[in-house]
Length: 135
Image (cartoon, rainbow, N blue to C red; front, side, top):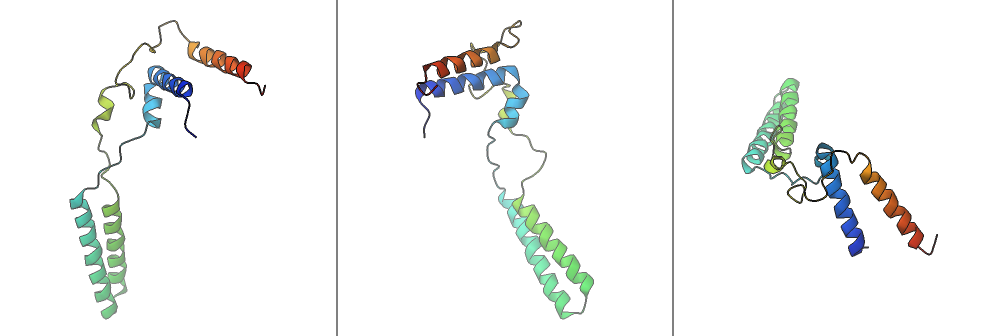
């Protein structure tokens, strides 16, 4: 069920306030861009799997259990390498320091505002509950 226009505005306001109050927490929960698969990484991983499979067949042909174990480990490592993304890379999305709006607008908190955000949300909740005929 889609949100009404009023609910969408409230949600946007809460999101801006979250980015203004605690940008680190907001970045932790913001949706991240999906990592792009590197074709070279997939080819290297696939090559390792194929080489491991060939070594596994060779290990069965020769009675060499140790070679079969090494081949199996190589196959698993190649598959893991192919399906995982590189670790330690950072995307350029953190450079702005703001939320999805790009910067801090009028929703930025003032120095002495303390708990005004929660107070506003409680007031809105109470106002909404008063308007609802079910309550």
